[in-house]
Image: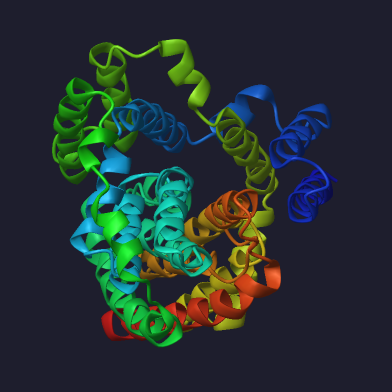
Length: 420
């Protein structure tokens, strides 16, 4: 009976998230409460399924970014990139793509597009060009760049925590293929948009006249942010060697910036996406219900039987399933469900190392498939719509889905060469 309740609760939560009839945090909370009320889980058991390392990384980085952005550093970078490109729309698109990808490797994707998006629209207006192609390429770059590192995308944080993988493990695996994908992206975007991009000399001069120095709102905070940011990167790279969890590094960065940043602490704390944090907490409990009742173990057996324990076949199935499902589903609950499944496969003697990379690449890159595939897509399209440049589901999917397929094909070839 407990198994059936756990499955029904999980499915109801997923349907509620997919249809967006109920806010995803409310849906996950209701699911967690139902599992407690039906005695599928006790409170102690429910708490034991919450991955506090993932929660710690998210909270720490959200607080850190909320403080750092007040220095004006992100506006500075955007203007500087536009001027380095000499106001050329195509070169600006490429530099903004690369900037977005790099920022997304170290910041939350949503935070990145919130910082870069409005500045992109401003520069596009000065150049008198349509900002939609710029914004679409930034969405793609945010999801691709986030795939490269442990902290770039929530699924990677979850996978790293569950599998004991550190920052450099991701850089050496997903990071390598992301570089190849970004090169392919620039080439493809050149054919799709590059040849149509032009602006008059007067508009280009207006961009060159922008003063990036005026974007810096707090120079003291800027210098402190840069120092702590460098320490954070080193902390993530060497956290295994120095015996710290990744959450410890992120929370330490947040704590240091709260003390030395001299910002309004209550305002900074209010900037954290608490609804997202709570969503993660309750979702871990809902998936914990499946694990506790043995449903995950049974699913692992089904996968083993279907692939006859063939590791390469399992890897490819997980890659494509993750990508296609993540293009229409939120990749967080999907990955949360797969993690215990893969751990169960490991206990059955399957080499699960390549499976982690397959899930990471599929779930993160799959988000580019449709407008609802990732939070960054929804947020940046919302900003675009608000400024009078609508991005419809059809407009997005026409470009996004082929791009997603291209990135998954490249990932598949990479995984086969590396692990087959």
